[in-house]
Image (cartoon, rainbow, N blue to C red; front, side, top):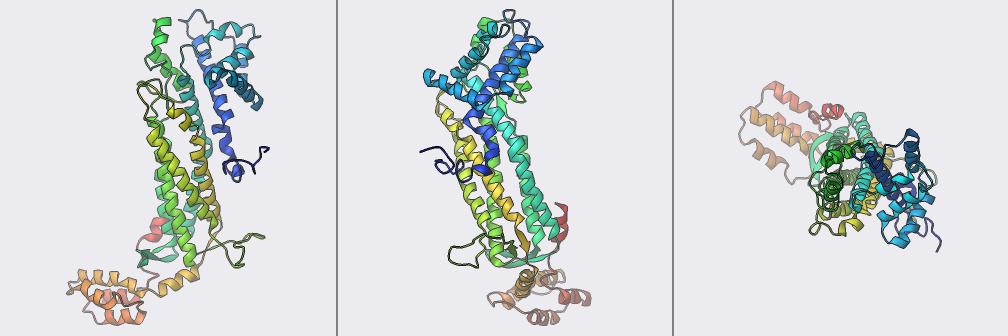
Length: 456
């Protein structure tokens, strides 16, 4: 079957390909190969710049430009050429080394340096740095910008509806009111906190040889401070050196980052479910798109499909993110290959994350508050003022305030304004306190909700 979006095994490469296309430049097989080329070339350039390696003279600016062009101009055809070599070597990183040697075989200045391509490196020196670069750039260029947009939209909703009173529900039952804006502010705040965790996880790497001890490095050039050299090199790549590793970088930092993404996803799952519920209650309506069908049999339907799609993909994302976070730091002795095949699924886990965030954002863009439904809900739940009444009774020392309100309201169904005001009128309260309670409505009983919504 010819390759197309319709023949793809994964929905990320098929049905949803356009929505996760931005991650292809970071997590595709071609992107991995390109990053390996980048690391190999940067390592060669760093070695050539070291005066204590006289066998490798420093490159001229023109030669450096040609080396950099191999990365900058790396194409799908180049990736296919590397894969053709891999089909013979059965080794993906060695194929990159051979491809570089072939590319520069006719270059009078670079060709003599080809023995120093992959010098003192194990494959994992190249792989771990390549994945680190992929994760760092995807975080900065794709995932965080979308998360920023999601937070910004929630802030907009928080500010727009800061004063719009809403009946809360605890255990699914009517509870002390809030405002629609404050409930959106809660999620904006939680995602801001989650974002900070994602941002501040350092992305680490290593380039210390076969088992992490610079064995070959020190035999070849004992006079070089290889740990400092490795630290300077990883820093130039925008990464942090992990000084203690086996053959593999142990992925503890990556696991922490994947956990941080999973925590953010959990907040969005909570958001998806709450918005779904508010749509069901009529608190939000959804903007209708011309030509769109909600149900194949019920013409009236406008389903909250964006939030359902988001929730479903977040479940898939988190199952993978948490598996990877638990699996990657575990390797038998100095190295096994279980992390290698697992790492190839980073793009899948983050692809479902990206798809879910995009779906949630699309859903949020369609929402319109329904003040009439919110007001009707509040007007049918005067019993929620029982909390306010018994609290004022406590202040003025009236007997058994909680018990009196419990007897008046618990299990009695919806109370009316007259029911509550009749009870308030019977209380031995100061006139000011009584008048304040008599004037109170469920829509007014929102505390600092509006203020908090505006501060987020």
